Image (cartoon, rainbow, N blue to C red; front, side):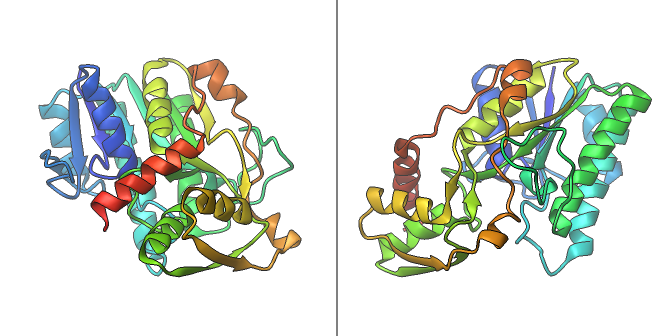
Length: 301
């Protein structure tokens, strides 16, 4: 029962692929790059190419889809918003339509906390309105609506996961934890452009992969689910945490801005994911940041 994993050379896709393979699940790894960082060959394909995707699904007899492939954050391709829409919305639509025609048994879509934008006070349930503040967040919200519509109109067994900011080994794009650790190792001070009181919701990549696999296995469970770490920290809290782990960390955030802090999503409610998927984050301690620090030292020295 092969599972198609898009974005299989990326942060989340790689973690999902290796977790599935470790338990003996056959995986069809698809990415724009033919080779991932661990040397495993991927099936080179762009999700904006429906003909190529159709050929892969048919020839490999794919039975489930995990869609991780995307422009992976608000800062990626930020000066190319149309390209972000084409990949994130168009690519998702391609996969959903192919899944409908091939009667794919399960479709898991990796959405983002950015789909929320401004939220009501914590804890934020999945029923909170989606009011994204950037094009990336809007594309993720659009993808969720498409998954829900295909489920309602065509009976596609699809589920969406609203994933918070991911950190951990193989994270190579910008995030505050990575920047602080890299600058500390290099002896540089970090100037943080985010307000000191802005809330940050980090979740370890292994926890995300566990949530994705749990969603894949939960046949018939539809709707969106929040996926985040167990706590919310301010920017200053994150700086202090990294400093405890590496005293070389020297960082100055932007001044506190209570009004601006309210534009960040409040703490997500994880009760629904725990109940429906049997998932909870487990890598919340400083040990996970220590692990990421060691990985950076060996891979990005």
